[in-house]
Image (cartoon, rainbow, N blue to C red; front, side, top):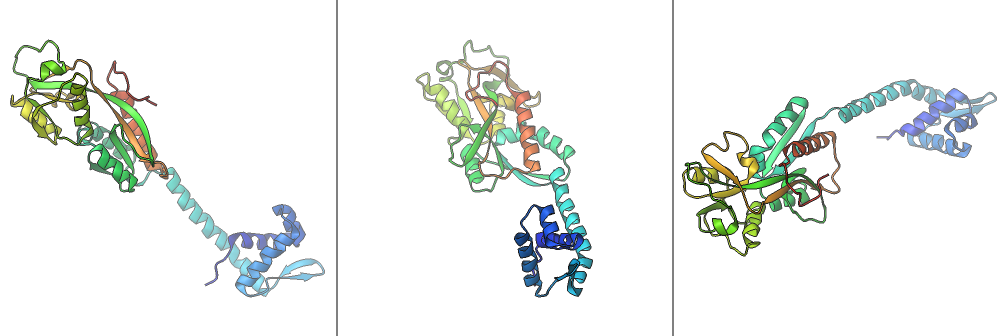
Length: 309
């Protein structure tokens, strides 16, 4: 089946309408031999002569007239196809996969996803959870488009953009007992600690907080779920150190006492993507929503570990 070159077809129509190769060449700002070559290639592809020279210039042959009769509908079909594709440039649609930690998924993502669904009903957003390294690996393997993770994260092919700070706080059962005067690593070391399981970025930050004071955390429970940790703490089985976002809402901190640590401990959340990722409209809107969430969720008085931008 012949593959019609649309550029050559347009040149053919222009030669016919102008009546000469030279006139068409002037319009196209090409040399006359270049125009002649395009017509020759078109004729070779169709295996028939399309133009003939006469005393009054160039005239289409019978085959050329047949091609000319169809060229208008060809142009219309091409224009319609281009217009249909262009519509996708202006509408937000398609599928985007977002990866994040379980805590952010529970306490940050629902309103963001709700907002995006209402604004862009044709956009499908899939969500996967995992720790920072799992999400980074999935992004590198093109299984996830955008990651919202606890920094730092490393990767040669990753674009990393910090978006917000979140304070860590101590939670314990709200039983009316007296407050601990200073929530330092040394003061807390003697109390039963319920904490995230090893391997997560959150656990690494908590361990480093103790380590900076020369202490080693001695947890009595290591759990993989923020909600499981809070249930154990509500039951009076120990205290925990958790991201403040997990106890911001009234329902989330019900039955818990929430206090700041000394010294303060924060984590930085950021978006992660492949550097070579082609960013479509859907991804752009998701990134904008996550950045806006970061601006509104930054804990007051925090000092970023990474430059926010």
